[in-house]
Image (cartoon, rainbow, N blue to C red; front, side, top):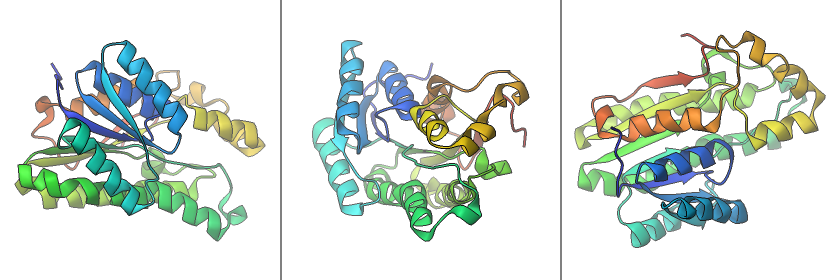
Length: 254
């Protein structure tokens, strides 16, 4: 089940963390994976790991906030592997800061990466998907969008925007047999989370003790999120669109 042999997938922010888990598992299922990430060296290392395990992947340095770079990346993927079947909007960024201590520059960075990046990538891939009457678009939002999260006001807003945008895209693209779904991770072990904890005592306070309040008593792993992506990308999910799935160990049940 969930066979993705020779499907062409783009994973933004696929070099590390959740994106690396998604890239690795998609390749394991047979997809040809393009890792679109600014972290070029880390992306290349992930590609090497995938290839060592028999998978197919390429790294394409890409700033998702730049539409022209995104278009160039999609063109390179098409030239290398063929038309894009699966887009996974995973690239994201945040810091844990009370809203009153943030600045407009901070807002712009979070909005540009987390939300405008999704707009750019969807805009770049859908012409071919529409022409072929086929495609899977899967965006990684957050349970912060569904229930809020201390110190993540702007981040939560961008992730909520992704959910609303995806529902609208699901309606607009349904006639072209393109499904659009969202996955909302809970707190997950990633390098970004580690960086936030190292940089901020406030972040440490917010994250501390989370395992005790998660019903399944552990934080998520990148692979937990990746298998949900594989399901939405598969033929078995071809009658599911416009949906939002939490992968959070039961932390949110809404």
